[in-house]
Amino acid sequence: MSHPRGEERPRATLILAPTGQIFSGETVTLTCVIKGLTDTQWRYSWYKDDGENSVYSSDEKKQFSVSVRESDSGKYTCRGQRRSDSQRSEISDAVTLTVSAEAQAVLSVSPQSWLTEGDSVTLSCEVRGSSTGWTFSWYRDNNDFLSEISRGSGGNYTLSPAALHHTGVYMCRAERGDPAYHTQYSNPQPLWITGLSPSPASLIISPSRSQHFYLDPLSLSCEGQSNSTGWRVRRYTHSERVSDCSSGWGSVTGSTCSISSLSLSHTGVYWCESESGGSSNPVNITVHNGAAILEGPVHPVIDGDSLTLHCLFRHTKPPDRTADFYKDGLLLLTQTTGEMTICTVSKSDEGLYHCKLPEGGESPQSWISVRVSEHVNKEPALGLVGVSVGVSLTLLFLILLPLLWCCKTKKGNKQKTNQTLDQNKRGPGAVESQAGHTPLQADDGAASIDVTYADINLKMTKPKKNQETTHERFDTVYSELKQNTNKGNEE
Image 1 (spheres, helix red, strand yellow):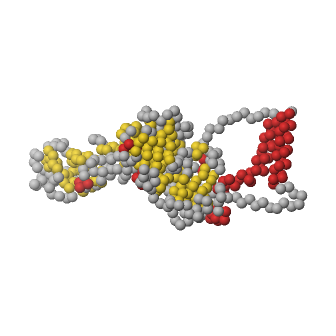
Image 2 (tube, rainbow, N blue to C red; image 1 turned 90 degrees about the vertical axis):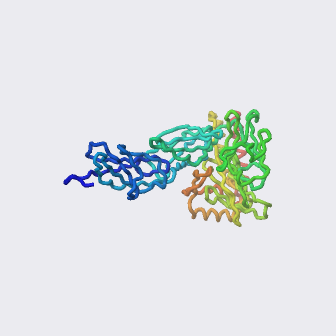
């Protein structure tokens, strides 16, 4: 078609929306704009990858929308043709459309998924490969169905402070556009909150430990404060999500769930739940098909109490039960008895523990939680007697301190322990625990070594002539303390 001399053909411009990363299933709009013309009697055509045949044509409508797939990726152009005289515009510059697979929301947790009531935790949702234009919805798995709990334009959902009722399995989903395009649901992210105060029920595990050998039997019972009526044992695993004991993985008798032979699929988080929605503190149970497991408390330890960990061997107890004990990836000590004891635990003792055998067998990691007790402030005793007794007790404590210090470990291999301490002083720092896909993970970080975990060798030297022995000095101080106390009471 010839054009009048000096007349230039108008140029078309193709506009693609939305811009950026496009996912399979999203709706894309292609608009063909021809500037400088008021005549609306145009026929528009769109082309893909320099093809001569149009992929779409429209009379008078300058745009079309389509739900795209990965196969729709390519370079697109457009042009217009006036219906009155068939005048054609210049073809537009090419616009590249890249369509990725369906968008996937990814959910992560910080700082960790196993919490104590009152802690803070943040769930973060992001769309892999894209970060703009999304609105996020949050869901919680409650009684085996999803319910929306919050919605916002940001990708973070924070629980501060975390409470017992926040325990559950969380997921997120993102949407954008009009009509709205929804991503797939994210990976499930469990949150487990341990209460500070006694829960209405307790999960009793027999044998009472969080790690168990493959094919061993296991019994789980719910005990309420008044009675056990209406309580059931539930669990969460990554494969089955939340399920009851009655669903097939155990046999139910009243409020007791019995497992005759443990399999690796029984690894998960277990708790008791009532018909009214009350729940016990959760317990993480690990089934291990290896040479050793770590025996420790299944419930939080109260600060100030003692903590004993045993390295259990799969079959029989060998003559040499030497085991290495680790906390957050850091070697604490080597014990020939297969056990270690911390006489007085504190919040700093909280972390991931495991043991390892010299021949290479290794237990899984177990999270040891320490609960800070609420101390009741008592009014100090008044008067001279109270001051005298307080000073005397302080002196007595200073004398007995070296004798009590060795309680941090029991029956250790002293030579190997000292070697372990020397290696630790020269080695890398400790590892701080964080959450991962499983209830807990560990990342590298620095930490100091608590020398109170090691055996302290007290060497008693032979007293010189006319020199008091330790026991004689103790008897003297104790007699003076008793006399001063009696004298103060008489006054």
